[in-house]
Length: 225
Image 1 (cartoon, rainbow, N blue to C red):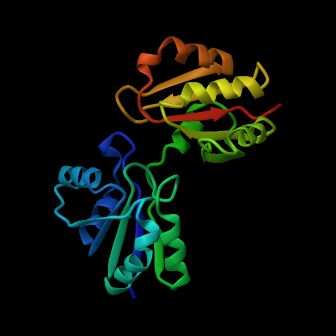
Image 2 (tube, rainbow, N blue to C red):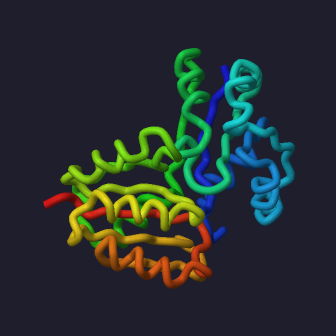
């Protein structure tokens, strides 16, 4: 019976890869990747030569049974996302569930993920928090924001640079004007940045600096008082 290991990959700084992750990749019979090009760059940096198979949001339903069979036929299969931990807003959940249903051993290594350092750096309470991933693009977007408006715990969201201003304007519409947030970008990279303040203050900053809106964003929202 084969084994599946989910391997977190650096979200910015390549030094964030762990020694155990490197060893597991070297030992793997099968390497699955969200984007083979991104993973091959990482493997080349680590001086590891492996054939990499694509497993992403566009083919995971179609290839699920085939991948599970491949896992069963090999001793060790690893799954890598482009950045961060597989299944956290990335492909992986369906494969883990299918493997568990088949009684295949599944492990996930501890390692890089964007929302934990963002939560800690926000300076908002970390003892209780909720993680919402990406907001819906269209249907259900306002409903989700209304739910977050009433959330008493610190709330963490992911957002793309293309939608950050649109999202902040939606917060301005529904949140109390004193509600504080922290937007973090380029976590663990050279240009890592934290923008803190009320929703209006943070929106004003991004509106005045649209040319600097680059890199994936993590939004941390203060709990409702």
